[in-house]
Every structure is written in structure tokens, then in C-alpha cells.
Length: 130
Image (cartoon, rainbow, N blue to C red; front, side):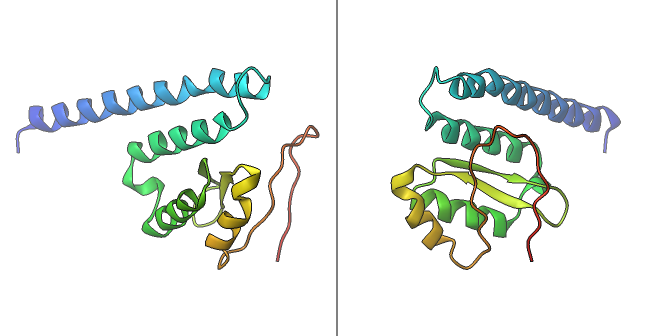
């Protein structure tokens, strides 16, 4: 293999990752508009979805078949968007679901542990579960 070919492929990969990271960064002001009530709350879900799709495009290692299947089940049941929280072998999938679809999403994911999510003003807390 030719070294310049390898470097060319690496450069294209780096350029693509930079483009994706820039797109992800550009989602932040949109989220700010939702939080400050200048955009509809359901946009939060759509922005989460866009961010997750962008993040997954960076590397095949970011997700797994299992995660993708759960994500798709939730989306098919009415979730507007979601993403993976945590790192390594653990963590959570979090979804934004409008009230009228929450029961359908819970049912679609009934075989996994569910931790209710809501917006908080108090900041980060440690949550334990068994």
C-alpha cells in the first residue's frame, strides 16, 4: 500500500469528523432556543435525534446493534429523539417523547429498566438503582 494513499484516506476521515463535530456544535444554540422557550418543546427531541445521528456517523464503535434496535423501537413507538448517555459498557438511552406517546414507548421498551426523565432546575444529582 502506498503511504500517500493511506494519508489521503486519513485526511478525508479527519475532515469528515471535523465537519460532523461542527454540525453538532451548531445544535447548541438551537437547544438554547428551546430551553428559553423561543422554539417548540418538541424540537428538543428532533435536535437530540439529529445529534445522535451525527455522533454515530463519527465511528461504528459509538453504538451497537442492541442500542440501535432499542433506539429504533422507541422511535417507531413515537419518541421524537434520543441519545446514549454514559460511557463504556454501561449507561442509558434517553428519549424525548411527547406526553401522548409516552405509554407506547414504555410498552415498546418494557423489557428494559426505565428511569423516568424530567427537566430539573437543581442541577446534577447522583442516581442509584438496583
